[in-house]
Length: 193
Ligand SMILES: C[S@@+](CC[C@H](N)C(=O)[O-])C[C@H]1O[C@@H](n2cnc3c(N)ncnc32)[C@H](O)[C@@H]1O
Image (cartoon, rainbow, N blue to C red):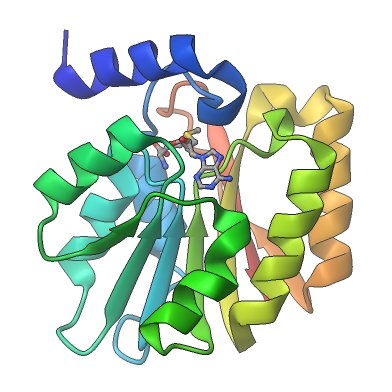
């Protein structure tokens, strides 16, 4: 079995609600998630919940030397793996809800893009609210927030809640095409502040 698959399964078994998936996202979903980022102009890009780094890999391929990357991963095992795999990037073994504090420690007050791999449907509501509020605090006006959802989850009440929250919080929200090759099939919300 692929090393990342095994790592994901093991971490899912240890913390199912926090990891929220049994396999990493596909490269196709990662490409769709990062497509809205303007890599020429972005000064700071944040990633929430990079896991084993599928989306990080896609970001790194386009990252310019003038752009700062900040990864925030609550799972210690994933965070250690990421640090070894991407030694030139900066990862924090913290929660996304702490992003303002993390950025302040780096002398950064706002960011251009947030790529979010968090498992919204399985996070406690109060944590979701704190993370959304933290996003508003740090995303610059006109900045982009991208987060994915599984197609199968659309029938669940949590999916409706997320959609309503995104529409209330952002100036403009659109969805990407469905990535059928992802397991399970998924799409992303692309939200502009
Ligand atoms: C569904 S996995 C996605 C992993 C990866 N982005 C991917 O798409 O393959 C969710 C990730 O979010 C992380 N996570 C969960 N809650 C978090 C939080 N509050 N702050 C930061 N990361 C969190 C988990 O540890 C896990 O790595």
